[in-house]
Amino acid sequence: MLRQPQRKPGVAGGHSFGGSGTASGPDAAYDQDLFERLRGLRKQLAVEGGLAPYMVFGDASLRDMCARMPETEDEFMDVSGVGMKKLEKYGKAFLDEIAVYRSEVQ
Image 1 (cartoon, rainbow, N blue to C red):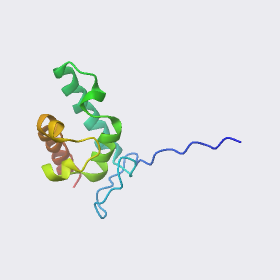
Image 2 (image 1 turned 90 degrees about the horizontal axis):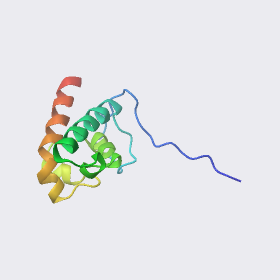
Image 3 (image 1 turned 90 degrees about the vertical axis):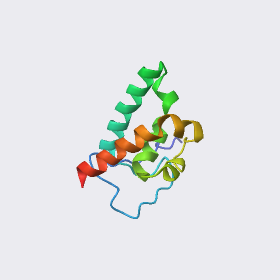
Image 4 (image 1 turned 45 degrees about the vertical axis):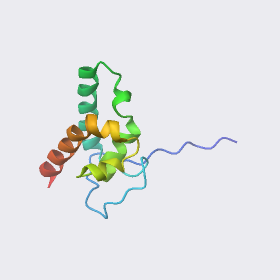
């Protein structure tokens, strides 16, 4: 007997940052609109660096960014897949994009 695979939660077109602000990792509910914007930023940075997009951040990291919506470098370090090197290399760009998105949807 095979089990039906469970879909990862996502909030298609919604804005999930109005709640408690806590996330339970890369599988937490996330904002699909912000996810698409961060995917675009990831692609741009990957092209500029001559890398595959997943080498910048994987989808799980982007989903976690969308769920957590970090505002500071310390909060960004709590995102799945973020270490000091990625914080230094990509942190400002992603934090800025998240801040712009937050200001547009409020």
